[in-house]
Image (cartoon, rainbow, N blue to C red; front, top):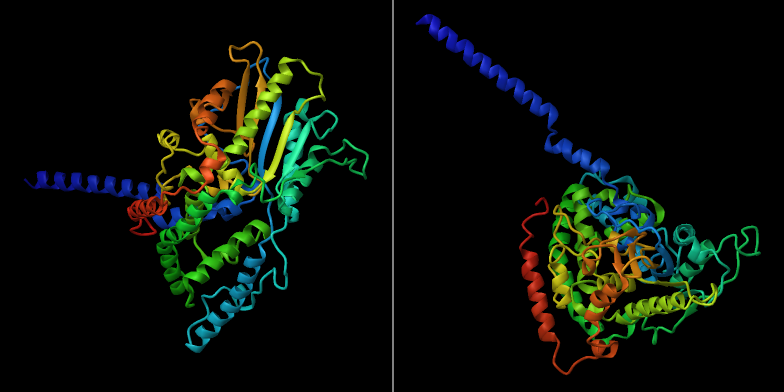
Length: 506
């Protein structure tokens, strides 16, 4: 009996040792939540998470690896290029410059208040005590900065290198049409792009630059690039929905306000957090400073703040309502018409230099976002069927859930869509449209998720569904009161939003 008990003890001891060794291995091989969080923090680059304030260079090489682009078939050659680009990185506007001046005053008042309450100042970052706005004293803003000039200049060089047979011949304003809005940062972006595109092709200065023409329309009549200025139904929708969007963002800002107040011992308000988030975006994008305002937030908080910006762009500029993108129909029609002219010239074998080879446009996020939506980009699952019926889509999922809709991808500074028309004489369909976003091929839901779409299919599935109304019909305010629709939409969004609000850690 004693021998049996002894053997059982030895067996249990062996099992215990096996469990102990296994547990130790698990501890060694699987990082704890805190170490996993640390690794996550170390790999988090806030410059890639600034929504539409993100620089093109920070995200241009981030692609969806699950999508495999088509190989351009042998014998296919590009015959025309359409570009719709956002202006490059810009300075904060005059209104925002004033906000930053107020923030500097507020930070000093918050520190003084903490001192009066005899609170420890040890947790307050050193920069807060003496911070002044980098734009203090400026009375003008919103202009293209040097980084923005470089973005567009380099983009012009890259595109010329990619399509030499379209862009290497002698410049003529009717062959390479360049258009921009009347806003200086957009026209300056067009100039910077063309300096790169035509560099070494002229006789001006050491860089052998050449003169070129950039045409603009007045804001009041620019239906191609500033359609949002004159579309009254869109302006009414936006005015009605802006308060609802702010309500959707409030829970995130309230929770972050509480967390930062406790972390640093300062009586932050929601407005302080909003201004600090804006400062974070400006410092990281324009100045490459990531350890001041951005350093106040942890990566989870930064991801949520980014999401609130993405949410706003989605509802007010993107798939939140069909009027957001349907008002861009004149631009889509202009793109298709330019392709039809290029096809006609190619079929008639017109001599090179006698017809347009590129139509290059420079505008704003409010242009690029609707145009991307008209193409059906950045959709998930069955979303494409909904937008064909002009139905609003579900809101972008809250972090940490993954989402396709990100402002940093949809419309960063210098963000762009390119539609390149190819002639493929040996194929059944003789002309194809190659669709690229931020210089990378992207799937087109209307063309079976291919980036290389037969031109006739592109017209039938991308353009035609939006052609039942013209711009005037889309943008004229109807007698039927739209408020009911908007109120219903607001309730719909709010209800869906509340489903994923329980906590920021979720």
